Image 1 (cartoon, helix red, strand yellow):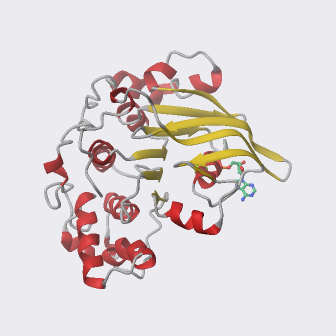
Image 2: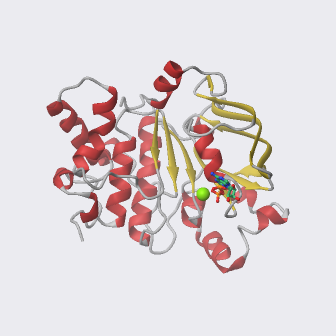
Amino acid sequence: MTPATAPCGGPEATARPEPVISLRQVSTRYGDHVVHAGLDLEINRAEIFALIGGSGSGKSTLLREMILLQRPDTGAIEVLGTDLMTLDAAQAQTLRQRWGVMFQHGGLFGSLSVLENVGLPLREHTTLDSALIDSIATWKLGLAGLAPEVGALFPAELSGGMVKRAALARALALDPELLFLDEPTAGLDPVSAAGVDALVVQLRDLFGLTIVMITHDLDTLWQVADRVAVLADGRVQGVGSMAELSQRSEPAIRQFFEGPRGRAAQAEAKPASRAAAPGRPAAGAATSAASLLPTSNQEPSSTPK
Ligand SMILES: Nc1ncnc2c1ncn2[C@@H]1O[C@H](COP(=O)(O)OP(=O)(O)O)[C@@H](O)[C@H]1O
Ligand SMILES: [Mg+2]
């Protein structure tokens, strides 16, 4: 992974947004059940983009379509300049190595050590020798804020926050340009969630990664996401920063800002400065390159529970 030569400050720092994912008129149905009905969406390079929507609104299906695990019935999807509807097997193989995916429950193999899990994509896709793969995997663990010793542990020995970090380290194994995260902070305590949030921002700032996530975490949405797309009734009902979306009046959008949780997150958030909510470190804090060096970016408790 090559650090960006100039700091990447997200879309506002770029003169012209460069789409790296574009969906046009995407329609998906399961039998008679229409999930996407002519959905359009564009995601730009180096932005942190969140997909939100009620349960069953088609977020996971959309994510699977972006990573070649599923095909829509009609429409066009382009990722990193490649048309996903017409690509051949060799192009698909190449493309899969340009993105990393973190599944909701981590998706780590329980029978492999953390280090083996992180090194797996390198074993599958490169001819590097084992010692080099282990060093790269240890480096990726450090990038994800885990100490080298964690590599010897098995997934069952990790705390929830450490599982997410290990899964993130594995997603970073092949130096992706694009990162897909399904509920990266779900089930974490607030301190671990804030740690993962900070890591996401660091990865974007340091490497110019484009990050697409599904999340229900209002703190993440307010403090980390540059833009958010609201899915409902088979389409994107609105796209914008949380501050922009909070001004919209459509019921499908309003529901994310109403109710006690929505109001509390909104009241605590200072999106312009990405300032911390009370009791939570600022998501954008500590984004210097030095803070990403292995062993200097540890979670407070990087020993197993
Ligand atoms: N493999 C499948 N077969 C049939 N229906 C499915 C399948 N996957 C998802 N669905 C349905 O499609 C809708 C959208 O699902 P999903 O994309 O998982 O939504 P979300 O992630 O937003 O909760 C839901 O109604 C779900 O029940
Ligand atoms: Mg889902």
